[in-house]
Image 1 (cartoon, rainbow, N blue to C red):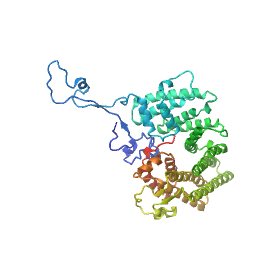
Image 2: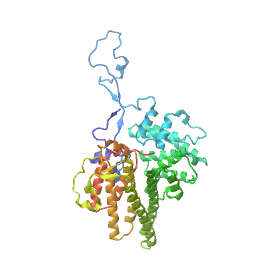
Image 3: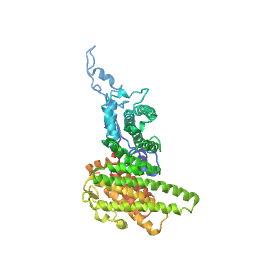
Length: 485
């Protein structure tokens, strides 16, 4: 396997516009920001080299075959070596290659990765269509079609991609048959199947809202379950891996998440085995509450546009809910800062507070792995998750009608949160820290939320922070982000 991407591996839009592409998959930040259709960075191609006969004239006895034998027939008529792109990789077990390639791009030991591992040790002939569908086997067909499509698309093999799409049709047919079973929601394998479809749309999108459609279907499946009943540790680990996908989809779609319901909060909290897990779950609970606030805000904004004034009660109710949640987050931060196990030090003290933004010198930060030095990777990710949650709450408050003093206060908090997100991202030289952070979608989530908030901020501080964020993202190898599922 050799790289044929050339000197630039960026997407075609960035190469044509001659701008730096962050090589993020499936859509780079430049294209997403400018509303362009992104074809993703160029990847790899497989080439097959053939052995050709020597250019020197070799005397042979009449009737004696050439020393090159049948290999000489593989050369092109011109006598020069030929490099051809085969229709498929040169391995006997193509499916094994698709699985290995896909596993490199998703976080280890998540539900999709575990299904791919199970597929590696399974007899794929058992996946042939039958009259009855085993709900416990649907996930294997789903991850097989996903791996085939993902490999074919990312490496430019149209025949493999078509093969994956045919397999994807089989996946949808089997899943529909499984969903006709009234008890299908009880099987974790069915949940993993729908999760795989959502991940496929995230990495290889076929439509603008397909991912959200699959996530809505996943929530409906989970709605049929009783979170008050005791579940196995395996099922809880599945719920834990799905938290960020469910909340991201709900916040993106502007609807309340199922995880905002008290019974789901109780279930996810009671299985936390350490103080760090409990604090992390508190942030996910706050994000779930943010989805409720965001849904109320969307309805409120629509009413204000249609009816004009007269929505004071709804405005006050939404503002109060956001302020209460903001207070909880500030209290959470105070408790975490007092915990010696979750510590960090500032490696660049002049970046201490957002009020100093106007006086920052226009220089590059010092060459350190990160501007905040953490005691462990979990502390870095938790701080990013905290600031992501805080930005969602502040975005609700900033969108509502406010007094100038309150608006300035909330903007300062938002600036400080974005600054901490930037300072928490490692540089390319910190390869080990990068690898650990890429194993979590929290980093990409934090970057996207910070970018969304700053795009609406026209203040000098906001423009400065947006420029800093773009520089950080360009240095961070976003093309290597792995998804926890």
